[in-house]
Length: 190
Image (cartoon, rainbow, N blue to C red; front, side):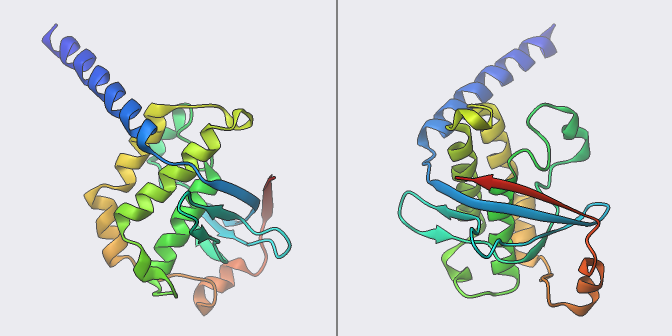
């Protein structure tokens, strides 16, 4: 009985936190195409479209435009995939933008100094909310936004941010996987 009450209290408090977080998360403008090539199981490559690249413009006017990179989509634990909205590809544009910020940091690409792992988490939440505010993409889900934000702003994510290795196309060993993609997925945003 006590554990049941604790679960109810926890869910209530989570809901309050999620609602507060959602209302304080900005939206931006998302446009372009998401092109992902399947290289091998759990190995994908994001390919920017030359004519219509994936671009996220934040409410402050800063622009993030991912370049070619290896990705796994959202780094969501496999056990969570069974839950609605916890797919590693459900919010693909947000995950691509977030992955790109990690690649920038870990490979020390121009502009990486503008970001830290908290800012990267904020940006992913902004892209997710931008998607959620558009009814074509499933609608609002404050708890999903908040739980994913908490995951990417965690100390585990910070450890990966600070100490992750640079893996980007151009690394000869990695490019061997990408020579012949087995499949491509294309998503377009107006």
